[in-house]
Amino acid sequence: MFHHQIEPRFSDTDGLGHIGNTAYPTWFEHARMPIFRIFHPSLELASWPLIVARVAIDYRAQCHWGLPVDIQTGIGRIGNSSFQAIQTAQQNGVEVARSEAVLIHFDYASEQSLPIPDHIRQQLEPHIVEAGSN
Image 1 (cartoon, helix red, strand yellow):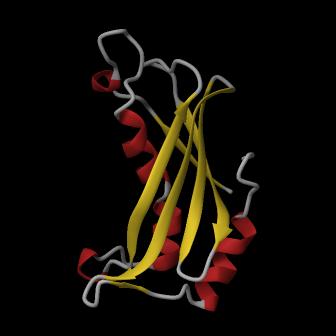
Image 2 (cartoon, helix red, strand yellow):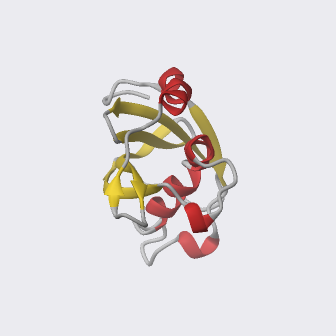
Image 3 (spheres, one colour):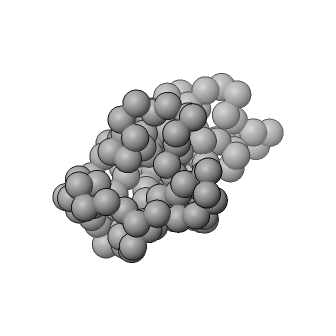
């Protein structure tokens, strides 16, 4: 499992005084950086090998500015060319949001999915979590 800490920005708050729902997709994407490095260590955009197929976020509790948010990222199901990133955001030990994203190993030139290579699969497997937990 990968761990990342976010310091919410004042601008992440909404008119109700808590972190707005639009901040979480960016936070979760940023916390997927270790996964991106497994697939593409250089992070060079010209040869980027992933595309997002789906993102779902469940908001579980209010989150506030001024306190760090811990994001845990695990790997769910790994298919032939796609995999799930299972993520939770916690503040003060309370789960405030949960996300499941499906990413596809993708060739932008041919616009086709590619099988996930064995050497990448082997690096993802130690981070597998059950879809309902992490």
